Image (cartoon, rainbow over all chains, first blue to last red; front, side, top):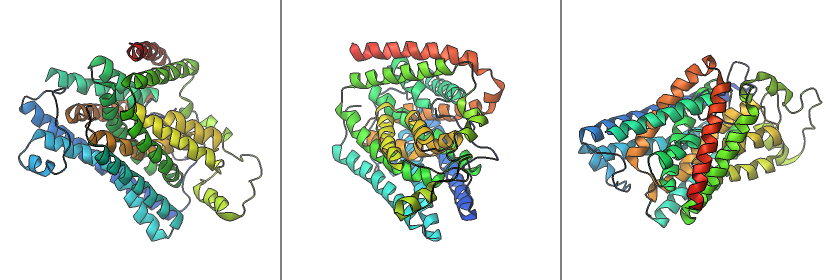
Length: 142
Length: 284
């Protein structure tokens, strides 16, 4: 069974069986690990700031909320609107795994692994398809 | 304000116990938000997907630094989990929420019974002995390396000390894991880890770490659909994500100091009771 925790099952360790043998793969692993950390911490920090803004504004969860409109978010953010900061934090979190795929794509392009380049591009296409499907189907009652 | 703190605390609890018990946050978070805070099930699933992304990104970062996850294998399989997740995201808005509640009741029952069976032993994934005994080819001559792009792909996806096989089962299982993840707001490791470990010959520790890595893109592919269809409350998602993040951080630090046997038994009871409540919702 897999874990939702960070190291609950602790599959890591110095003798992890999946250790990549190539230094290029090691470097890519480290670069992606750093990217994931930065993305997660940035997203969580934005959510925490948005939460503080919500508290200061006297807003409560479970109140009817606005749907996401990407065009509104920059304006809301500049105006210090708590919801705008929350949306931005959520988008950063959702985009972080895709950013990891983009980083992998760049890494595999550099090493000339055409198969993994194709896999990376295909994943991004599927994620983009999700965006298109979401937009096409439109908003619905939650 | 109070309800906000309660949600933060709920997310924290789900993160701590999820981390201690080796469960994805969604398994605990969805019932908590649905039964505890009265959120519609579909919205709870959307919020849970955000929590899954957070835990996946944070844990995958650790696993990659330790070279525990197989990035090539994870990316190849997550192409299929992402396809399943997009399909699941569409299905989730097309089916009655009572069906989702019924499916969740089944999931909770399965997890509860699995925990009961495993009671008395430590987490299987934490037992190094399992790893070597399941490395494909251990003690046997390596399979012939041959011919064609399939063999080349298998070479690429295999790691040091093991060689993957039955890629087709892995692809199909990954699509299934993606659908389940999108429908129920879980990471899908319940499907992915057994498929990788038992069918594909990936050592359990590598399978667990690789599954964690894959969860992020799987959950984000369907979370986008939930987000754009208005299925995610930003305030609830923020509070629970922060809570899960902090809780899982704490859980991973104290996991080795706690006797999990009693905790597991207690949680089995909680999960089965929650399954019953979900079933009532599905039938009522």
